Image 1 (cartoon, rainbow over the protein chains, first blue to last red):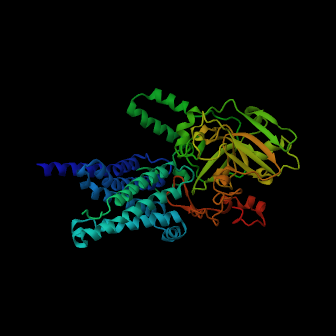
Image 2 (image 1 turned 135 degrees about the vertical axis):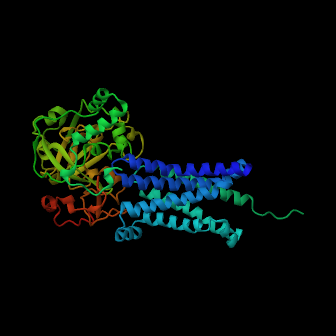
Image 3 (image 1 turned 30 degrees about the vertical axis):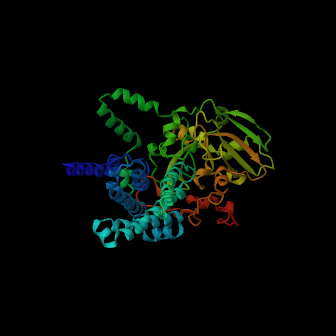
Length: 202
Length: 311
């Protein structure tokens, strides 16, 4: 009974995570993407990649601070959705914005630092997505798996930096994301410092 | 699926703007079932038509960007930083009464009412390409008059080497000015020979109607061979100067936005390429042209200048 309820909740969370994509698809069909729809698609997918990355990064601090253990069950799904939206963001840039003009894209990656940084963030997420299955955790061993998955920290920082670097003048949103990522990573640093294995008391 | 996703259409295939707007209106009202009220509301959002407009020189016959796109996709940070903000926030911006201060190195400085500023001039339609520094472009049928004809009336003296323009500062009407996005008020400037060039105009309308607030009502600059940010909107002062003025964007990010800001596919913005642009309404990017396609008219202004240094 409990397992079934959890399954339902998980399916519900899954559907909620698909909502931004559904709304985007609806807006595309209905012509609600404004005057520059390609820019709108790319930007919206990028926004959601960063937001899901932040949500995934928030799982552990939320669990520790509130004692709400159940939230950890959704960590993998949320992380994979961050990767999902990041990949769609890249596809939109490659396929819609540049229509597979690989020469232009390569020049962008090499010359435009915000593109370089953004691509690096996605590349860091790739091994995490690949090793997200239970089998992979077993094969790598929990310790190594956890070490590898710390790559999500630089990925989060690079994603925000990528956003910050492409903005012309309105830095409010990237700064907000930067503050949240800073707080979430800062929590981990503080936590690590205070829960360092203490000398055994006599 | 929106038509924008398809490659560009030929001009002959494009639905006439009036028909297009009517169709939209029709679709909207069928749902509501009340035709009349919608007609009234649509009318109230449109600007007043301008009379006595004659075709001017230098117009392109390229397909014009639809009125609805020109009036809803704007960079006018005074009305908000997002592209759709200016149209949304335009309601509180009062563009009448309006006056412009004439200052600096000229024989006839003073404050002149908007109506007196434009009255002596014959309004011309100029269909120009507009290239934004961000990499998108439009084709807009402006209505206005050559800037040279306006400036001559104030008799700039021999010390007038530059002309500086300032946008209105009114944070109560312009919500973007309550944010520290730029060093308000917005300032732009041209070298005197650029200002007097026959391509340079003051625009007071587009598509045969008065400018809407989001497009820089009631009077704005249009310099078609330069990136869009040079074409300053909602101008309240014109100052003739001997020294080169500091312009807003070049002050905000000197390595990214220069004083000249000529459209140049060979000189990249530090953060992105300027080689191509997306014409609004088209799927594929197109090549950006030197001086936005106006090289024949303006290249001479910059003879001998290193355009990579004077970007």
